[in-house]
Structures are given as structure tokens and as C-alpha cells.
Image (cartoon, one colour):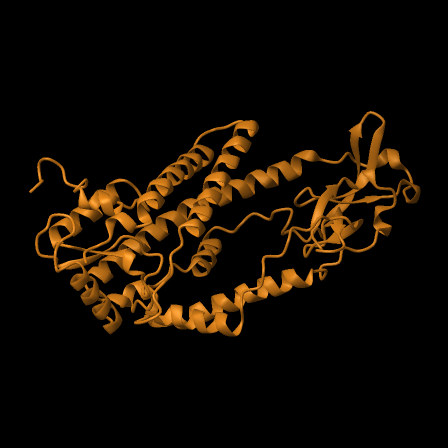
Length: 390
């Protein structure tokens, strides 16, 4: 019995999938590569989200069972399946509604302070406040860094453990050399010291100033002379001779921010150049065999496994050793979809000759990532042009 073209769920599935993937791709390109107003961005973001949701729903709607025999898992997927069997994935925590909040004073590692509204349930900082808008803000309760919802902690911990399982399974021999950002940064900063920003500065060189917000609204402010940071407000009651205090200098922080911005622009340019050189050298070493990587994924090792050999032979026999496109001798088995690789449903697979197989993949690649020909389109030789039709 050859491939059951009339009973395949992929006819409708692939056609619907193409439609929503095109919407997703177009929405993404418009959203991230064109200048849009805030209203337009909101509209396109919604379209992108809807397209992605529709793709997820399609996969659920057209899901077909994987086979339960001759199952193959690469080392990485085997490690993951063992991990999930022992530690099932926790449910995604619901968004916090922020019903219980309090205005608090948050102190950062550089000793700067911010007045923020903190959620007392999930611990997140919801809103910043200007210090001058809060009376005696120094007396506010301290921001609690350790407030976490139990389900958030468990969820993040599970994903951290999962990442560790993957890294261990990949091993050193399963990775190509990676560009060392830390080493590059150390060397670059020795040659080109980074200007002190307001977030890095310790604010040791500071003085009192008068900061004018409006004609009738002024505040006594402790300002850093080095970076220009507004460190904190000081009560006017504790200050004598207010009229002799210097004005808050807005230009210092702006100048500091500009220096830091220019430094990061040059840094980013040099990082990009160094990465391009690094990757070019790695590609050369891979091509000459100087660098080898052991692929431990299911996709990377499946085609040399005894499970694939059995599956391939079974599909070729089902299809009478005949290419389901052109009718010539079948020489290979093509994956219509990779969702169940290593445990494919027989409907996922179809026999083709080498020539048709190559043309199917060329046609799909020309139509974009994720584009899949339906079984009937393959049967109708839609991938063949008049020039190469045989």
C-alpha cells in the first residue's frame, strides 16, 4: 500500500500553516524593521501575537500520535526525557495582579536610591516615583529584594536545572569554540578605559546643591561632582545659608552619559569586528577538519541509527520501492515534517527518488523557513518546473 494521500492530515495543515506563518513573518518584519507610530506598533504586535497563537492552535488541532516502537533519542533528548520523567515541568505561573503594593526605598549596589512601588506578592518594582513628590522619603520602608512567589521560584529553578542537563549532555566535545566576550572586554577596557557612568560611580566626591524644578519648586540635592548624579534630597530644615548653595548642574550627567554612550558605540563596533574574524577562523578550521564537533542531538545522530534503518526500510516497502512523485525507483525516505523525528508516525514519511528529494528541498527552501509541500503537491510534481520536468 503506497502513501495514503487521501487520508493525510497534512493537506489542510500545511496550507493553513503557510497562511499563518506568512502573517507571522510579515508582522515581525513590519514591527521590527520599519518605523512605526506607537498605535501602529500596537496593532502589528497584536497581529504577530495572533498569528503565533494560531500556529500553536493548528499544531494541537492536527496533532497525530508518534509511533511507540523503534523509538530513537539522541543523547541530549534522552537526558531531557529522563529529567522530565523525574521532574515534570511546573505550570507557567499566572501574571501577578499587583493588588498588594507599597511605596518603598530601593538602594542599589552603587548606593544610589530610588523611590518605587513594590508588589508585596511577587516582589517586582512596578512604578518609579520622583523623590521630591514623597515627603520624608528617607523614612520609607526598605525595598525587599527577597520577596518571590513560590510558583515563580519553582518555575525558574526547573528551567535552570533543565539548562544544566542540556549543557552536561552536550559536553565539551559537542560544542564549537565560542567567542569569549569576557576576555575581549578585559583586554579592550585596558586599552580603552570605560568612562564612569552614574550607575558605576561610588559618588564619593559630592556636594549640596539647589535644584530648581519650577519657579516655586526647589529642593536641596546631594549631587555627585564626578558623574552629576542626583544622589538624594536633603531636608531644608537642616541646612543653613541656603542662598549660598550652588545650583544643581544638569550638564555634568548629560556629559557623562554622552561619553559613556560614545564608548559603548566604539566598543560594540570592535566586538562585531572581532567576532567576524573569530567566526571566519572557526569556519576555516571546521572546513579543514582541524575542529570537529560531536552532534549529540536526535536530528544529528538519528540517520545512522538502527531505528532509522528499520523505519526507512518499512516505509520503502509500504511505498512499493517507488518514488511517490515521479514513479521511478525510490532511493530515499523524505520527512514531510520533523515534529516527531526519532518516533515518526508513518504519515510523516514518504518515499522519493534522490532527484525528486533534492528538488523538493530546493523548492521548500526557496519559499522560506518552515515551508512544507503537502503530500498531494509532491504527488503532482508541483516542485518541478517545465525546464527540468521529466
